[in-house]
Amino acid sequence: MAIDPALKALATEKNFAALTTLLPDGQPQTHMMWVDADDEHLLVNTEVHRQKFKNVERDPRVTVTVFDRDNAYQYAEARGRVVDAVRGEEARAHIDRCAQKYTGADYANPIQSERVILKIVPEKIHRMGV
Image 1: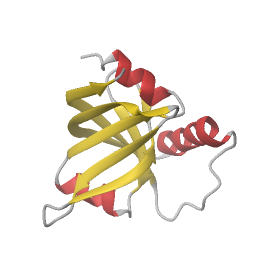
Image 2 (image 1 turned 30 degrees about the horizontal axis):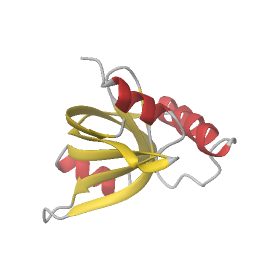
Image 3 (image 1 turned 120 degrees about the horizontal axis):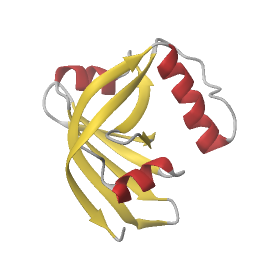
Image 4 (image 1 turned 45 degrees about the vertical axis):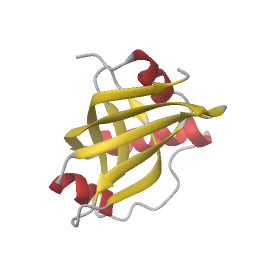
């Protein structure tokens, strides 16, 4: 199933997203993230040692809200599930593409464990102003 066009447009531009996952005790945890999309998924790149990755391994339910960089009152919220976690060279190359989009250079931070792309299928979408 194709991703919502407005959501994909926001996610493939230089806009930030809030990724919310669930901690082991059920409390939400939210991080501001770089975001991307393919034709079916929202894509978020992280590392396997981070809490957000541990959270989605245990419970794949997430919310991703992508904000228009020019007007934060225009956004798309997608509630869905992580359906795949892509590691290795593909994930490493993806973080460089994201860094190019957001900073104009390859990813410069040290990688502490292993990069992973979280593929998220949106199940419910709420849009405001887009």
